[in-house]
Amino acid sequence: MERTSTGVELRNLRRTFGPVVALDNLNLSLQPGELIALLGPSGCGKTTALRLLAGLDQPDSGEIIVGGRDITAIPASKRNMGMVFQSYSLFPNLTAAENVAFGLRVRRVAKPERLKRAAELLELVGLGEQRDRYPHAMSGGQAQRVALARAIAIQPDVLLLDEPLSALDAKVRTQLRDEIRRLQIEVGITTLFVTHDQEEAMAIADRVGVMRAGNLEQLDVPAVLYARPATPFVASFVGTNNAVPTTVAGDGTVEVLGRALAVATGSDEIPIGGAANALLRPESVSLVSRDGASDGSSGVVSSTSFFGSVTRLTVKLDAGQFLLVDMPSVIARDFTAGTEVMARAMTNEVVIQHQEAVALIDE
Amino acid sequence: MAAVVRRRRERHIFAWAILALIALYFMLPLVSATEFSLRENNGTHGLNAYRAIFQQTDLRDVVMLTLRLTVISVVLSLAIMVPTVTMVHLGAKKYRRLVEFISLQPLVIPPIVLVLGVVNVMPVSLLGSADLLGFEYVVLAMPFTFRALDAGLMNLDVKTIVDAARGLGASWFTVLVRIVAPNLRSGIFGAMFLTIALVLGEFTMASLMLWNTFPTWIATVGQSDASLSVALSVASLAFAWVLLVLISFADRRRKA
Image (cartoon, rainbow over all chains, first blue to last red; front, top):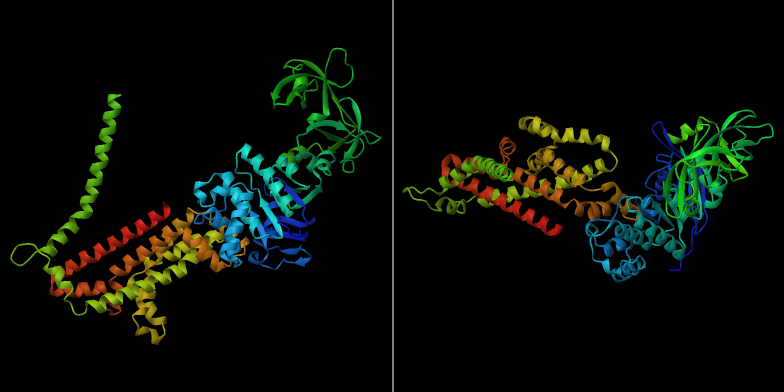
């Protein structure tokens, strides 16, 4: 399926619902053929951004540029966007093939041609045999595959995915996630994917945008987003963190688990001598048996959780604080509950934030 | 175990007894009316009253007028209420109570007030037409059409499928005709049936506006021939039942 990809630009998009600011001057640019995932907690404005791009809602101000053309005032039915929704959005009165062909029918494509294309697309999503089935006779995964085929059938300028996997069970979810990515690359379609699941966003996207309260906090490739979060919120929201109490030293470093670490983000906000929390990933902490070890912070393993290849240990430090530590399960066997350990930071820099910020983020 | 089985049997018998009582309550007047319509002068039973229906000279005109009013009422009701209730479910949920309140007004406003209101505001050119009655029946049917369509839309994620259809390039007309209406078939059939039943049974407005519809005609006939009048009532009821069965059958076939 040869096609030319289209770039998208959202400029200063603002949308309010009464006193609530859903989008606060959002700027976002998608390169042709790129898949960007918008990630954020409920109510952060990610779905609003998607609906504005689809034309299902209108911004208070700002511009939406697709393929160099301003489409802000163009209604949804004239925008040529393919969209897959969170809830199963198949038309219950139409079969799988009729659903896929619906957009083509609206575009007055001749019946033999649209049925042929519907059949091809259903083959592409692995549902060639299900073409005459009605939605009520399909599983959730099948319904979302048909919805995906239907969205692609019209050869849209942009593919919009509004949490399409959130209603599926874990296994189907992973399968369909990989299928979406395969199809997106195969078709070369510019895609905006909205999700609250960070693992999903990281796995599927070229770049991930983290949103909070109508603003885009950071837009970056997944590895950078994880390793060098631009704000304390991104650091807290993406992945799991330990918030280790510390104080900013005169040279701008912070002492964490017995080591002086450089501050990657957050030093602007906290003065020298100010109390802060250093955000430390569970995999950035190492444990050694307390016998013979002198550096680090001492504590006791209080519990373990087995995740397959990785085990997560909860360590209670002597100072009273709990610390999460991830390590390969083969090594974690040596650290059963009750083992006395020394915890050390295995990173050279950390993100810091105000101590009260943790509570704010958790809200 | 035996006690559980006994209790279950007792509950079963009780349920059937209640059902039988309700059936009796509804069926007794109908059976009596049917029996009365079948009575002959010589004390036997026969179909003379039903045969007499087809000998009435003005029957054709009355039936044609009633059918015309039925078509006007059904078409107008659906044309107004399907988009209205759909819009309420789509984005104007805060107006649902208001629309429901307005739709219930015909139940609390006396027919004479409605008739006088309509007569006072309608153009003179329309006042001489029986079709005006059709417009009034649309208002009278609103409590039933609103509820039937509202219940149908409750079972449908209408916002998502409308968004999906709009996103695929469908106009609002296409969305309503190709997506909403087919999925709202039960609700539309229900609204249709209730409107038809209302038109076939409405007496007050037609009588006040001096039109000879099926119900007013039955009342007039009843003044001179009680058997014929009751036979007509039973026949119209049977017609309504057949209609209901046909609608249920059509809806069930779609679901299958």
